Every structure is written in structure tokens, then in C-alpha cells.
Image 1 (cartoon, rainbow, N blue to C red):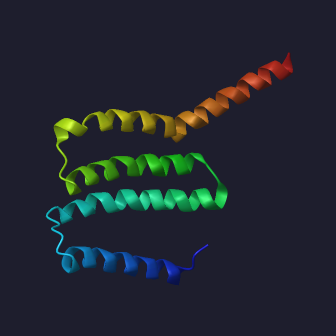
Image 2: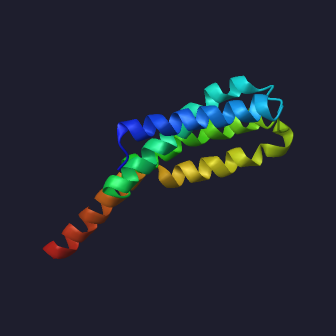
Image 3: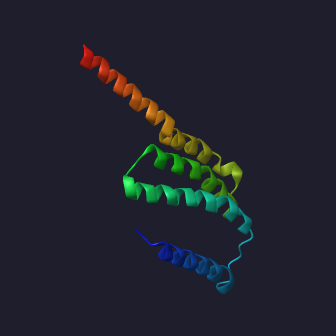
Amino acid sequence: METRKQQEAWKLIGIGVLFFLIFGLGLRFDHWWALFILIPGAYQWFRAYEEYKSVGYTPGVGAKVAQGLPLVLVGSIFIFDLDWGRVWPLFIIMAGVIALLNPYKLKKDQEMQDVKYEKVEQQ
């Protein structure tokens, strides 16, 4: 597990690389404001990854991935200036992925499995 000092160092490196790409290479970044949408989603994914590394897959991991997905998708569409008319099917795909990752459904399904096994054992 990385220490807090290492995490801060990686953040500084990332910010430095971003500034280098923008100012050093002269890349235009007209949609910088979309980072305010993208970064919280990416942070949710980072938290999900950290939780997955420590305890494995749990409903909480799936929930964090599902929470970050719409933010990352919308932020990416704005950053790359994609045409909404072409990328709208991604929202249908996203809805399906979120349905698969839904922690409440997973928990309810597990409870139903437990009830079925209890009934079989009682007979």
C-alpha cells in the first residue's frame, strides 16, 4: 500500500505532466472545465480500485465504479469534444453496466439464494 507521501508525489507528477502537455507541447485544451466533471468520477474509480485491492470485490466496489461511470463518460465526451449524436449509445451501454454493478440488486439476489438454500435444508 502506498503511503500518503507517495500518493501526494503521484498527484504532483500528474499535475506536472498535464501542464507540460498544455504549455510545453502547445496542446490546446479548450474544454478544461470538463475536468470538474471527470475528476470526481475518476476518483470514485480510484477508491473502488483501492478497496478492491484491500478486501476484494464487494458491493461497495461495484457501487463506486457505477457512481464514477456517468461522470467519466460525460466528462470524456466534453473533453474530446465528441458529437452527442454519435455517442448516445454509450449511455445505453452504461445503464447496462450500472445494472450489473448495482450493489442492492446483488445483495437482494444473495439474500434470495440464502432463502432458497434454507428452504431446501429444512425439507
